[in-house]
Image (cartoon, rainbow, N blue to C red):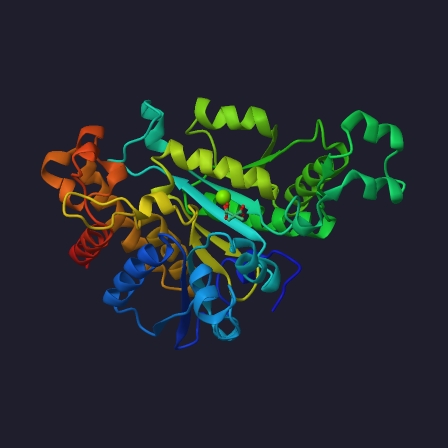
Length: 403
Ligand code: IPM
Ligand code: MG
Protein backbone atom coordinates (compact mmCIF):
# COMPACT_ATOMS: atom_id res chain seq x y z
CA UNK A 1 0.00 0.00 0.00
CA UNK A 2 2.80 2.40 0.92
CA UNK A 3 4.50 4.02 -2.03
CA UNK A 4 7.90 5.63 -1.72
CA UNK A 5 7.82 7.62 -4.90
CA UNK A 6 5.36 10.36 -5.62
CA UNK A 7 4.15 9.85 -9.14
CA UNK A 8 1.13 11.79 -10.28
CA UNK A 9 -0.54 8.91 -12.06
CA UNK A 10 -0.50 6.72 -9.01
CA UNK A 11 -0.84 9.42 -6.39
CA UNK A 12 -3.38 11.92 -7.70
CA UNK A 13 -5.60 9.49 -9.48
CA UNK A 14 -6.90 6.16 -8.22
CA UNK A 15 -5.30 2.96 -9.52
CA UNK A 16 -8.82 1.49 -9.32
CA UNK A 17 -10.65 3.96 -11.54
CA UNK A 18 -12.01 1.09 -13.62
CA UNK A 19 -13.51 -0.68 -10.62
CA UNK A 20 -17.30 -0.75 -10.67
CA UNK A 21 -17.70 0.13 -7.02
CA UNK A 22 -15.85 2.90 -5.23
CA UNK A 23 -16.08 2.66 -1.46
CA UNK A 24 -15.82 5.79 0.60
CA UNK A 25 -15.44 5.73 4.36
CA UNK A 26 -16.72 8.93 5.94
CA UNK A 27 -15.11 9.81 9.27
CA UNK A 28 -16.95 12.80 10.73
CA UNK A 29 -14.91 12.90 13.92
CA UNK A 30 -15.46 15.73 16.40
CA UNK A 31 -16.78 19.27 16.69
CA UNK A 32 -18.21 20.51 13.40
CA UNK A 33 -16.68 17.47 11.64
CA UNK A 34 -19.84 15.29 11.65
CA UNK A 35 -22.01 18.25 10.67
CA UNK A 36 -20.03 19.17 7.55
CA UNK A 37 -19.26 15.57 6.61
CA UNK A 38 -22.93 14.55 6.93
CA UNK A 39 -24.03 17.50 4.80
CA UNK A 40 -21.43 16.51 2.18
CA UNK A 41 -22.44 12.84 2.27
CA UNK A 42 -26.11 13.77 1.84
CA UNK A 43 -25.16 15.88 -1.14
CA UNK A 44 -23.05 13.08 -2.66
CA UNK A 45 -25.89 10.59 -2.17
CA UNK A 46 -28.25 12.93 -4.01
CA UNK A 47 -25.84 13.23 -6.94
CA UNK A 48 -26.41 9.51 -7.45
CA UNK A 49 -22.94 8.81 -8.81
CA UNK A 50 -22.59 5.43 -10.44
CA UNK A 51 -20.84 2.93 -8.19
CA UNK A 52 -20.12 5.32 -5.32
CA UNK A 53 -20.82 3.83 -1.88
CA UNK A 54 -20.45 5.76 1.35
CA UNK A 55 -20.21 4.25 4.82
CA UNK A 56 -19.83 6.28 8.02
CA UNK A 57 -17.50 5.11 10.77
CA UNK A 58 -16.58 6.59 14.16
CA UNK A 59 -13.29 8.23 15.14
CA UNK A 60 -12.04 10.88 17.59
CA UNK A 61 -13.43 11.79 21.01
CA UNK A 62 -16.84 10.28 20.29
CA UNK A 63 -15.17 6.97 19.42
CA UNK A 64 -13.26 7.11 22.72
CA UNK A 65 -16.65 7.35 24.45
CA UNK A 66 -18.21 4.48 22.52
CA UNK A 67 -15.24 2.21 21.73
CA UNK A 68 -12.57 3.34 24.18
CA UNK A 69 -10.27 4.24 21.29
CA UNK A 70 -9.96 7.29 19.01
CA UNK A 71 -9.39 5.03 16.01
CA UNK A 72 -11.25 1.76 16.73
CA UNK A 73 -10.25 -1.50 15.05
CA UNK A 74 -13.43 -1.70 12.98
CA UNK A 75 -12.85 1.83 11.70
CA UNK A 76 -9.32 0.84 10.71
CA UNK A 77 -10.52 -2.35 8.99
CA UNK A 78 -13.10 -0.36 7.00
CA UNK A 79 -10.50 2.26 6.09
CA UNK A 80 -8.12 -0.43 4.86
CA UNK A 81 -10.73 -1.70 2.40
CA UNK A 82 -11.80 1.75 1.18
CA UNK A 83 -10.91 3.51 -2.07
CA UNK A 84 -10.80 6.91 -0.32
CA UNK A 85 -11.64 8.55 2.99
CA UNK A 86 -13.70 11.65 3.62
CA UNK A 87 -12.55 13.02 6.95
CA UNK A 88 -14.00 15.84 9.07
CA UNK A 89 -11.90 16.86 12.04
CA UNK A 90 -10.74 15.63 15.43
CA UNK A 91 -10.01 17.38 18.72
CA UNK A 92 -7.54 16.21 21.35
CA UNK A 93 -7.04 12.84 19.70
CA UNK A 94 -6.11 14.38 16.33
CA UNK A 95 -2.61 12.97 16.32
CA UNK A 96 -3.85 9.42 17.07
CA UNK A 97 -6.23 9.53 14.12
CA UNK A 98 -3.79 11.28 11.80
CA UNK A 99 -1.11 8.77 12.81
CA UNK A 100 -3.03 6.16 10.85
CA UNK A 101 -4.32 8.34 8.03
CA UNK A 102 -0.87 9.84 7.33
CA UNK A 103 1.89 7.52 8.54
CA UNK A 104 -0.14 4.31 8.74
CA UNK A 105 -1.44 4.52 5.20
CA UNK A 106 1.48 6.51 3.78
CA UNK A 107 -0.33 9.70 2.78
CA UNK A 108 2.39 12.32 2.58
CA UNK A 109 1.29 14.97 0.06
CA UNK A 110 -1.32 17.41 1.28
CA UNK A 111 -2.70 19.39 -1.63
CA UNK A 112 -4.51 22.51 -0.48
CA UNK A 113 -6.03 24.55 -3.30
CA UNK A 114 -6.54 28.25 -2.63
CA UNK A 115 -9.16 29.62 -4.99
CA UNK A 116 -11.27 32.73 -4.82
CA UNK A 117 -15.01 32.39 -5.44
CA UNK A 118 -16.72 35.54 -6.57
CA UNK A 119 -19.14 36.69 -3.89
CA UNK A 120 -16.99 35.65 -0.92
CA UNK A 121 -16.22 38.30 1.63
CA UNK A 122 -12.45 38.64 2.06
CA UNK A 123 -10.35 40.81 4.34
CA UNK A 124 -8.03 41.66 1.42
CA UNK A 125 -9.70 44.52 -0.37
CA UNK A 126 -8.06 44.38 -3.79
CA UNK A 127 -9.29 43.30 -7.21
CA UNK A 128 -6.25 41.02 -7.45
CA UNK A 129 -8.10 38.56 -5.19
CA UNK A 130 -10.41 37.72 -8.10
CA UNK A 131 -7.58 35.88 -9.86
CA UNK A 132 -6.31 33.88 -6.91
CA UNK A 133 -6.06 30.21 -7.85
CA UNK A 134 -3.05 28.28 -6.60
CA UNK A 135 -2.21 25.19 -4.59
CA UNK A 136 0.00 24.25 -1.67
CA UNK A 137 1.75 20.91 -1.78
CA UNK A 138 2.52 20.41 1.87
CA UNK A 139 4.60 17.47 3.09
CA UNK A 140 2.73 15.75 5.98
CA UNK A 141 4.96 13.08 7.45
CA UNK A 142 8.29 14.75 8.19
CA UNK A 143 9.76 17.82 9.85
CA UNK A 144 8.58 18.62 13.37
CA UNK A 145 5.80 16.04 13.00
CA UNK A 146 8.06 13.07 12.33
CA UNK A 147 9.14 12.79 15.97
CA UNK A 148 6.24 14.56 17.61
CA UNK A 149 6.36 12.30 20.68
CA UNK A 150 10.11 12.64 21.10
CA UNK A 151 10.42 16.08 22.63
CA UNK A 152 12.42 16.16 25.83
CA UNK A 153 14.61 17.90 28.39
CA UNK A 154 17.97 19.23 27.28
CA UNK A 155 19.75 16.95 29.84
CA UNK A 156 19.06 14.04 27.51
CA UNK A 157 21.05 15.74 24.76
CA UNK A 158 24.02 16.21 27.10
CA UNK A 159 23.98 12.52 27.92
CA UNK A 160 24.08 11.79 24.22
CA UNK A 161 26.95 14.24 23.72
CA UNK A 162 24.95 16.50 21.41
CA UNK A 163 25.24 19.63 23.56
CA UNK A 164 27.39 20.63 26.56
CA UNK A 165 26.80 21.55 30.17
CA UNK A 166 27.58 25.18 29.24
CA UNK A 167 24.67 25.17 26.79
CA UNK A 168 22.32 24.16 29.58
CA UNK A 169 23.53 27.11 31.65
CA UNK A 170 22.68 29.37 28.78
CA UNK A 171 19.16 27.95 28.37
CA UNK A 172 18.42 26.77 31.95
CA UNK A 173 17.52 23.28 33.06
CA UNK A 174 13.87 23.63 32.20
CA UNK A 175 14.55 24.15 28.51
CA UNK A 176 13.29 21.46 26.16
CA UNK A 177 14.10 20.33 22.63
CA UNK A 178 12.05 19.04 19.71
CA UNK A 179 13.32 17.19 16.68
CA UNK A 180 12.93 18.10 13.04
CA UNK A 181 13.60 15.25 10.67
CA UNK A 182 13.82 15.44 6.88
CA UNK A 183 14.88 12.58 4.64
CA UNK A 184 16.06 12.84 1.03
CA UNK A 185 13.47 10.23 -0.03
CA UNK A 186 10.58 12.13 1.50
CA UNK A 187 11.89 15.31 -0.09
CA UNK A 188 12.06 13.71 -3.51
CA UNK A 189 8.59 12.20 -3.36
CA UNK A 190 6.93 15.47 -2.31
CA UNK A 191 9.01 17.27 -4.94
CA UNK A 192 7.73 14.93 -7.64
CA UNK A 193 4.10 15.28 -6.61
CA UNK A 194 4.51 19.06 -6.68
CA UNK A 195 6.15 18.99 -10.14
CA UNK A 196 3.41 16.68 -11.44
CA UNK A 197 0.67 18.89 -10.08
CA UNK A 198 2.35 22.00 -11.45
CA UNK A 199 2.62 20.43 -14.90
CA UNK A 200 -1.01 19.25 -14.72
CA UNK A 201 -2.21 22.73 -13.77
CA UNK A 202 -0.26 24.19 -16.68
CA UNK A 203 -1.70 21.64 -19.11
CA UNK A 204 -5.21 22.38 -17.88
CA UNK A 205 -4.66 26.11 -18.31
CA UNK A 206 -5.13 26.81 -14.59
CA UNK A 207 -1.47 27.42 -13.70
CA UNK A 208 1.48 29.01 -15.45
CA UNK A 209 4.00 26.25 -14.76
CA UNK A 210 5.60 28.01 -11.82
CA UNK A 211 6.91 25.87 -8.97
CA UNK A 212 7.62 27.88 -5.83
CA UNK A 213 9.85 26.13 -3.28
CA UNK A 214 9.37 27.65 0.17
CA UNK A 215 11.33 26.92 3.36
CA UNK A 216 13.95 28.43 5.73
CA UNK A 217 17.41 27.67 4.27
CA UNK A 218 19.04 30.70 5.91
CA UNK A 219 18.57 29.10 9.34
CA UNK A 220 18.07 25.39 8.65
CA UNK A 221 21.08 25.33 6.38
CA UNK A 222 21.49 21.59 6.06
CA UNK A 223 17.87 20.45 5.93
CA UNK A 224 16.25 23.19 3.95
CA UNK A 225 19.05 23.61 1.42
CA UNK A 226 18.66 19.89 0.82
CA UNK A 227 14.90 20.42 0.35
CA UNK A 228 15.54 23.16 -2.20
CA UNK A 229 18.40 21.51 -4.07
CA UNK A 230 16.82 18.09 -4.48
CA UNK A 231 13.49 19.47 -5.68
CA UNK A 232 15.24 21.89 -8.04
CA UNK A 233 17.20 18.98 -9.51
CA UNK A 234 14.05 16.88 -10.04
CA UNK A 235 12.33 19.82 -11.73
CA UNK A 236 15.30 20.56 -13.94
CA UNK A 237 15.89 16.97 -15.05
CA UNK A 238 12.35 15.63 -15.34
CA UNK A 239 10.12 18.70 -15.72
CA UNK A 240 12.14 21.15 -17.84
CA UNK A 241 8.93 22.93 -18.83
CA UNK A 242 8.52 24.30 -15.30
CA UNK A 243 9.95 27.55 -13.99
CA UNK A 244 11.32 27.18 -10.46
CA UNK A 245 11.60 29.92 -7.85
CA UNK A 246 12.74 29.60 -4.24
CA UNK A 247 11.60 31.72 -1.32
CA UNK A 248 12.37 32.08 2.37
CA UNK A 249 9.20 31.34 4.28
CA UNK A 250 8.78 34.62 6.18
CA UNK A 251 9.24 36.65 3.01
CA UNK A 252 6.81 34.32 1.27
CA UNK A 253 4.15 34.82 3.98
CA UNK A 254 4.27 38.50 3.09
CA UNK A 255 4.18 37.84 -0.65
CA UNK A 256 0.97 35.81 -0.34
CA UNK A 257 -0.72 39.03 0.74
CA UNK A 258 1.29 41.51 -1.33
CA UNK A 259 1.03 39.60 -4.63
CA UNK A 260 -2.08 37.45 -4.13
CA UNK A 261 -2.57 36.51 -7.80
CA UNK A 262 1.07 35.63 -8.55
CA UNK A 263 1.25 32.08 -7.18
CA UNK A 264 0.82 28.68 -8.77
CA UNK A 265 2.19 25.52 -7.12
CA UNK A 266 3.90 25.93 -3.77
CA UNK A 267 5.94 23.05 -2.35
CA UNK A 268 6.63 23.45 1.35
CA UNK A 269 7.70 21.46 4.45
CA UNK A 270 5.09 20.20 6.90
CA UNK A 271 4.63 22.82 9.61
CA UNK A 272 5.39 25.80 7.39
CA UNK A 273 2.73 24.52 4.99
CA UNK A 274 0.27 24.01 7.85
CA UNK A 275 0.67 27.66 8.86
CA UNK A 276 0.79 29.35 5.46
CA UNK A 277 -2.16 27.41 4.07
CA UNK A 278 -4.36 28.77 6.86
CA UNK A 279 -3.08 32.28 6.11
CA UNK A 280 -3.76 31.83 2.41
CA UNK A 281 -7.28 30.51 3.08
CA UNK A 282 -8.09 33.80 4.75
CA UNK A 283 -7.07 35.65 1.58
CA UNK A 284 -9.92 33.98 -0.30
CA UNK A 285 -12.49 34.35 2.45
CA UNK A 286 -11.50 31.95 5.20
CA UNK A 287 -11.27 28.31 6.21
CA UNK A 288 -14.91 27.78 5.25
CA UNK A 289 -13.83 27.43 1.61
CA UNK A 290 -10.47 25.66 2.09
CA UNK A 291 -10.59 22.00 1.12
CA UNK A 292 -7.74 19.54 0.80
CA UNK A 293 -6.63 16.06 -0.12
CA UNK A 294 -3.78 14.05 1.39
CA UNK A 295 -2.34 11.67 -1.18
CA UNK A 296 0.42 9.11 -1.37
CA UNK A 297 -1.16 5.72 -0.74
CA UNK A 298 -3.91 3.84 -2.54
CA UNK A 299 -6.25 5.14 0.17
CA UNK A 300 -5.89 8.93 0.22
CA UNK A 301 -8.00 11.01 2.54
CA UNK A 302 -9.82 14.26 1.88
CA UNK A 303 -10.50 16.82 4.59
CA UNK A 304 -11.34 20.47 5.10
CA UNK A 305 -8.30 22.54 6.15
CA UNK A 306 -10.20 23.74 9.21
CA UNK A 307 -10.32 21.76 12.43
CA UNK A 308 -13.16 20.81 14.78
CA UNK A 309 -13.96 24.51 15.52
CA UNK A 310 -16.00 24.02 18.73
CA UNK A 311 -16.89 27.73 18.82
CA UNK A 312 -18.59 27.43 15.42
CA UNK A 313 -20.56 24.44 16.71
CA UNK A 314 -22.29 26.74 19.21
CA UNK A 315 -23.19 29.25 16.51
CA UNK A 316 -26.65 29.34 14.90
CA UNK A 317 -28.49 31.49 12.36
CA UNK A 318 -31.80 33.37 12.60
CA UNK A 319 -33.65 30.03 12.58
CA UNK A 320 -31.52 28.57 15.38
CA UNK A 321 -29.92 26.04 13.04
CA UNK A 322 -26.24 24.96 12.96
CA UNK A 323 -24.24 26.97 10.46
CA UNK A 324 -20.76 25.51 9.94
CA UNK A 325 -19.87 26.14 6.31
CA UNK A 326 -19.87 22.78 4.46
CA UNK A 327 -18.09 24.16 1.38
CA UNK A 328 -14.54 23.30 2.56
CA UNK A 329 -15.65 19.68 2.94
CA UNK A 330 -17.54 19.71 -0.36
CA UNK A 331 -14.39 21.02 -2.09
CA UNK A 332 -12.45 18.18 -0.43
CA UNK A 333 -15.08 15.78 -1.79
CA UNK A 334 -14.57 17.30 -5.26
CA UNK A 335 -10.87 16.44 -5.04
CA UNK A 336 -11.92 12.94 -3.97
CA UNK A 337 -14.30 12.58 -6.93
CA UNK A 338 -11.52 13.69 -9.32
CA UNK A 339 -9.21 11.12 -7.78
CA UNK A 340 -11.82 8.38 -8.21
CA UNK A 341 -12.44 9.28 -11.85
CA UNK A 342 -15.74 11.20 -11.56
CA UNK A 343 -14.07 14.08 -13.35
CA UNK A 344 -17.01 15.74 -15.11
CA UNK A 345 -19.20 15.46 -11.99
CA UNK A 346 -16.41 17.03 -9.93
CA UNK A 347 -16.21 19.95 -12.38
CA UNK A 348 -19.96 20.42 -12.26
CA UNK A 349 -19.99 20.40 -8.48
CA UNK A 350 -17.28 23.06 -8.43
CA UNK A 351 -19.35 25.15 -10.82
CA UNK A 352 -22.35 24.69 -8.50
CA UNK A 353 -20.30 26.08 -5.60
CA UNK A 354 -19.29 29.05 -7.78
CA UNK A 355 -22.92 29.66 -8.73
CA UNK A 356 -23.99 29.49 -5.09
CA UNK A 357 -21.35 31.85 -3.75
CA UNK A 358 -21.84 34.42 -6.48
CA UNK A 359 -25.11 35.12 -4.64
CA UNK A 360 -22.87 36.87 -2.11
CA UNK A 361 -22.79 39.83 -4.53
CA UNK A 362 -26.53 40.30 -3.84
CA UNK A 363 -26.96 39.34 -0.18
CA UNK A 364 -30.31 41.06 0.09
CA UNK A 365 -32.00 38.45 -2.06
CA UNK A 366 -29.71 35.47 -1.38
CA UNK A 367 -28.69 35.51 2.28
CA UNK A 368 -30.93 32.56 3.21
CA UNK A 369 -28.74 30.20 1.16
CA UNK A 370 -25.33 31.74 1.75
CA UNK A 371 -22.75 30.62 4.32
CA UNK A 372 -22.01 33.10 7.08
CA UNK A 373 -18.61 33.89 5.52
CA UNK A 374 -20.27 35.18 2.33
CA UNK A 375 -22.64 37.73 3.85
CA UNK A 376 -21.78 41.29 5.01
CA UNK A 377 -21.03 41.98 8.69
CA UNK A 378 -24.44 43.47 9.42
CA UNK A 379 -26.16 40.33 8.16
CA UNK A 380 -23.90 38.20 10.34
CA UNK A 381 -24.87 40.20 13.39
CA UNK A 382 -28.55 39.60 12.61
CA UNK A 383 -28.11 35.87 11.98
CA UNK A 384 -29.07 36.40 8.35
CA UNK A 385 -27.30 33.54 6.61
CA UNK A 386 -28.00 29.93 5.70
CA UNK A 387 -27.60 26.82 7.84
CA UNK A 388 -25.16 24.06 6.92
CA UNK A 389 -28.01 22.17 5.22
CA UNK A 390 -29.36 25.30 3.46
CA UNK A 391 -25.95 25.86 1.86
CA UNK A 392 -25.48 22.28 0.72
CA UNK A 393 -29.08 22.08 -0.54
CA UNK A 394 -28.50 25.23 -2.58
CA UNK A 395 -25.33 23.72 -4.06
CA UNK A 396 -27.34 20.64 -5.03
CA UNK A 397 -29.99 22.84 -6.64
CA UNK A 398 -27.29 24.65 -8.65
CA UNK A 399 -25.79 21.29 -9.65
CA UNK A 400 -29.13 20.11 -10.99
CA UNK A 401 -29.52 23.25 -13.03
CA UNK A 402 -26.26 22.39 -14.78
CA UNK A 403 -27.45 18.95 -15.86
C1 IPM B 1 -3.98 20.34 9.73
C2 IPM B 1 -4.07 20.39 11.23
C3 IPM B 1 -3.23 19.26 11.83
C4 IPM B 1 -1.78 19.46 11.40
C5 IPM B 1 -3.33 19.16 13.37
C6 IPM B 1 -4.75 18.90 13.80
C7 IPM B 1 -2.39 18.15 13.96
O1 IPM B 1 -3.66 21.64 11.68
O2 IPM B 1 -4.22 19.27 9.15
O3 IPM B 1 -3.74 21.38 9.12
O4 IPM B 1 -1.06 20.28 11.98
O5 IPM B 1 -1.36 18.81 10.46
MG1 MG C 1 -3.66 23.14 10.18
